[in-house]
Length: 391
Image (cartoon, rainbow, N blue to C red; front, side, top):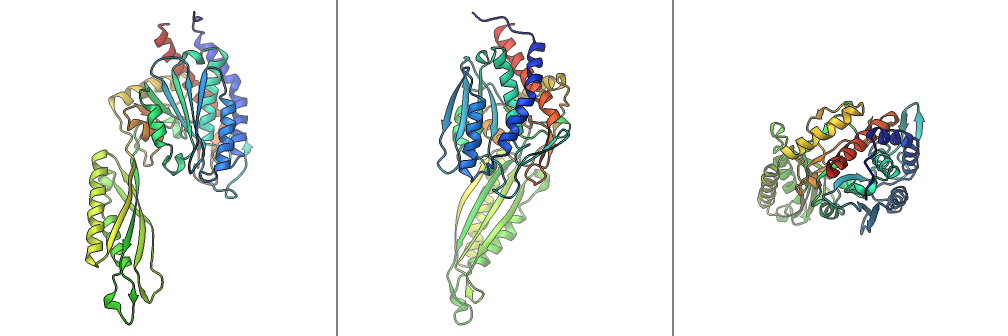
């Protein structure tokens, strides 16, 4: 027999009491370098999280990474379509580039303090408060923390998609935005790598016999960059290019990588098709060939009727916790919110603590925002449970 649902005020008091422990959890996580390629560091943070979320109400699954660190999943024992809580425990800073934890007033500086070890701590507060009131075992939810989000979740994506299927909604705790605005739209992202193969020859004695792969690539780059259309939210950026061996040799090899951003699935399809045709035309024009790999890796996070309803529901909880809750304009970068939305789950993002400077050496998190951010999540889960149980 289930006990009556405790008052929401009791849950809010538990949230407030847990904030100091959550800040300490964030500090310990930040002090471990978890650059995506630093597998031992990423897994050390993962071990810290496994201990922090080790409650009887949650069943834990660890998916061992093959290239990157381990991906972590927890499922509550309660039946029903779960609320999906999404985070990641890797960061963008290689060892020695930006290290340590320092606090001045309510501002804590350190790698991942905002993006997104602080976001994981906010989730921890809300779930720990539910656990203290013996409610966690009654809430259908899945918690995810992946080890490769900062490089596009290349390895974790299929696992995350599998766990997301059947969820009632997804809440993603990436860095909080100014004014606590909630993210409902993100552009899709992709990366294509193009390898041009020509024919080497001596630039002086046999220039006409060569097939210049660099020239083919240069022709492609000029066409590709012109595909950017700001009015459609479409950008193409050739950010890496290399080739050749010496100035007096017609280059046989050239390679470039192209960053792609788009607002809808049809734009992604047409852009990839146009890039392929441009590459083939450029290669053919100098007698070279081209091979293309990669493509779209995150489809857009679209604003749908379901995600708008989720936004309204969560925004009410955020306002009750003393936060702002405006809808954020379209975000240019992708996140795991894109991944779960692609399998049909309504998702919102940017629910982590406030701060500034993620992906920079002055990244900081506002410690005063931990309590209201966690309270918003706790209120949301409490209300979902109350509706589920008819309380």
